[in-house]
Image (cartoon, rainbow, N blue to C red; front, side, top):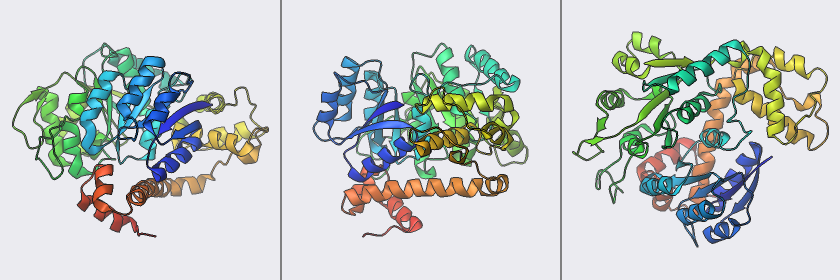
Length: 426
């Protein structure tokens, strides 16, 4: 089983992330102080480190430096509030593998961590012809400078394929910067992508770069690019055409050398045809399309993937119980590979060291799965956001101004979220 060091000083956030990471198959060592994390670096054997930037004792950059000095092969991911992305620039230069901006969805974090360690979910397993064709197209795309659009249902592995394209390209030594366009509030997304000058909005105390600047010399991955608002579609089109942009509140034209790879689970061609998406932007994004087939179309890969996830969960070579193969191959997998991974990991947790039984494979009934997938996904995202905001509020004694600062959102946005999610003190 993979091990991770979690460094987070907010007690509620630390508890929530510990539980989420453990459910995702990680063995978690959680600490609240940066100095304690630094002291663990010399003799550590962690597979990854997830560390907040603002910490007591020593900040996240000092933790990063300690692991870079003693355990340079250990990937470090930093968690940063919206207002401290400038620190992320320094972090990437110091060797951080990636960073994620608070507030974030748990699914975004687990997807980011999945590709960090050898033998993890970052390994793409399969022998299905359609799947191998997708890998072949990805390899060819990596050798070109064309914009790549990765298409596929949710859970098929679009980000993993995108990372594969980056790693095989001439930009592999440069940064890989992912952006989930659907997870960032629309009022924040422009400054997240293009940066902001001092005074551009309340709380902008200093100029800061956006994700495009962070990705200079590397690859930017725009996930769920179909969710962009019309105004942002036009600004993104300009970047694609001219590789120039201006920060929010600024007038200086900035130029970046960035490979743009995007992904969507929507049919963007159909969206463009009926006027819901800019056709010129679609054609620019899809210079080299790559489609990943859903798991239900690659039945021959289900059992090998199950074996891979058993090994990932610390049960290599564990036999599947009688009837399990028929059940796995007969299910429709609306959640695709991500759903299979969750079911296998949960079965290992339920078995708790004993042989896995058929009952441990909690495969949903087809009718329930088909009708409940979207509702379940929406509920999960809402609950994750609720838990994150509640943890921040409780840590700050329900001081909304301080909680908003830590989360990197405006006080007005936080108050709106509190009302929407029905949060209350005590």
